[in-house]
Image: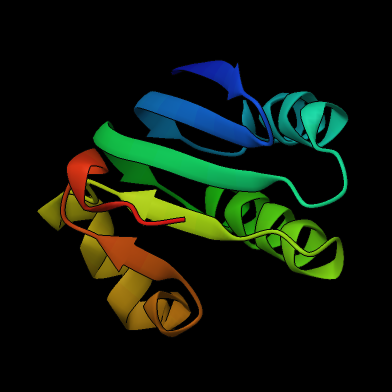
Length: 107
C-alpha cells in the first residue's frame, strides 16, 4: 500500500494505491493530519485502491471529522467497485461526498 500527498494551497490531494488496511492506517492518518491546517480540504483519489478494511475506513472518517471541525471538506474520488461494497455495507458512504473521478471534484 502506498499513498502520496500533494499540497495545493489549502487543498490536499491524497492518492491511495493498493490496500488501505490496519498495517498502514496509523502512519497514513498521522501523515495526512500533520499536513492539515484550518480550512483544509482533502481530496482522496481512490482510483487505485483495491481494498479497504475497518481501520482504513477509520482513517477516512477521522480525516473527515478533523476537516469539518476546522471548516474544510473531504471528497472521495474514483471509488472502485470492490471497496465501494465496504462503504455501502457499513453505510459510511452516507457521510462522504463521493464523486466518480477527480474531474468531478468541486470545492
